[in-house]
Amino acid sequence: MRIVSLDQAADEIWREGVRTRMLVSARTGATALCLFEQWMAPGTGAPTHWHPAEEVLTVVAGAAEVWVGEDRALLSDGQSVTVPAGLRHGFVNAGSGTLHVRALLASAVFEASYEGGVAPVRRWAT
Image (cartoon, rainbow, N blue to C red):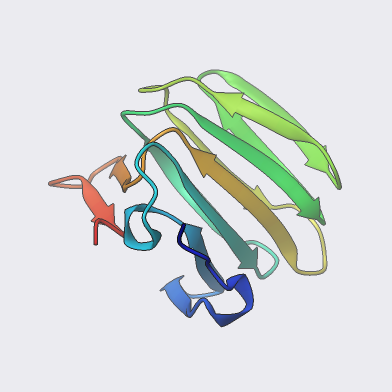
C-alpha cells in the first residue's frame, strides 16, 4: 500500500494565472487515473484541448465558463461535467475571484493536445 500525503504535493505554474497540483497519477503509483486540482485567476483557464481519455471536471469554488464540443455552460460550486475522450473542450474563470477546479482523467498520465500545438503534452508519467 502506498500512502500519498496530498498536502505535500508540489504546485506547478502551467500558464500565467494558473496553479496546478497533481494529487494522484502514475507518479504516485496509480495505473488508471490522474487526479489534479487547479486554481485560476479571473480570465484565465484551460485553452481548447482534448485528451485520449475521458475526463471529469468539477468546480470546487468559483464560476467557470466551460465548452465541450459545440456546447457551452456556466458551472458553479459543486457542479461537474464529463468530457468524452477525444472531444475538444476548455474553460475559463468567469468570476471575479479565484476559480478552483478538480479534474479526474481516466489515465494515470496526463496527456493533452492543444489547438495549434505541434505534439501532445504529457505530464506525471513517473
